[in-house]
Length: 306
Ligand SMILES: Nc1ncnc2c1ncn2[C@@H]1O[C@H](COP(=O)(O)OP(=O)(O)O)[C@@H](O)[C@H]1O
Ligand SMILES: CC(=O)N[C@@H](CCC(=O)OP(=O)(O)O)C(=O)O
Image (tube, rainbow, N blue to C red; front, side, top):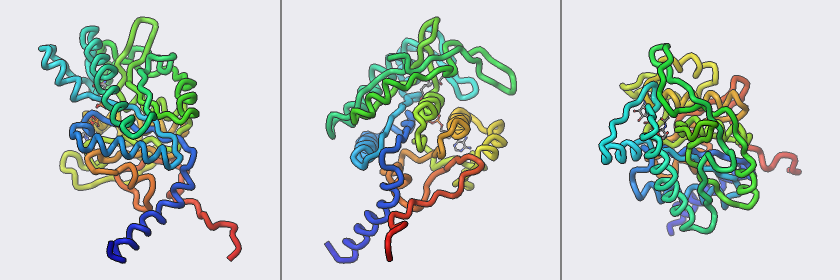
């Protein structure tokens, strides 16, 4: 290896040190969107990144989506499916397919990829151990409520099962299905991730998707918002379209619920999670509470004699 290459690799490792110190033992909830999991090579990188976080001493929790994969499966079955306010209109028939694809297929694939590196991942559905309880909630379309079937809002999270797994060194991989008194509900994965991050007092919520972050000029996509406060986001929310609306609403809820930082990252960029957590340059979009100062890594030399 040439000396300059070696030096730049060493510098990258040293740059990570204060961030390793800051996030050691901290819980990070990662929402892995269906649009970010289309390429097998990127899926393998994702699993590697999660295992890296785990070996680096963080407590990663994965909440996965699978919207495009559910749509493909419904198409193959000849079941037409529509969205309202960024949420899938979910009949009982659709619900069976949502549950089958998320719990039976996508969850298994992610667990398998992580476990290629060791016995870390344990797959669970939000129905298990009363992790997620939902109530039916209409979507808001042009300011008016529209019934979209078996789609719910999370009204209770019992994170005990996640804490047990995390304390045992495992990586929970969660499908966004919730129980309720009248059967199971389809929870948008962004919404599920925010509820879980809040219940676990996570230090970060990371949403991996298929855009660089939030654009203020969508669909032109020239103005990426690198950082915004919860109240700035609240102002933008009514004007956001399609997939970004539930995603940004979930970020807002998480930050208002006490999660210090929520990030939108491009899941198509290999290692975007590691770049976000362990380097000084933030990437994507970061949402913070009003009072949050720009993040500084801890000074690991603080208090030392000079
Ligand atoms: N303001 C915006 N900034 C960025 N993307 C946006 C915006 N408004 C809508 N989008 C769309 O939202 C999509 C991401 O949401 P979604 O398709 O639900 O992804 P995921 O499957 O990762 O949850 C992007 O691909 C983009 O087309
Ligand atoms: C209610 C609702 O819309 N549920 C979503 C659940 C999956 C999901 O959220 O997947 P992504 O994160 O890949 O979009 C759906 O049925 O598509």
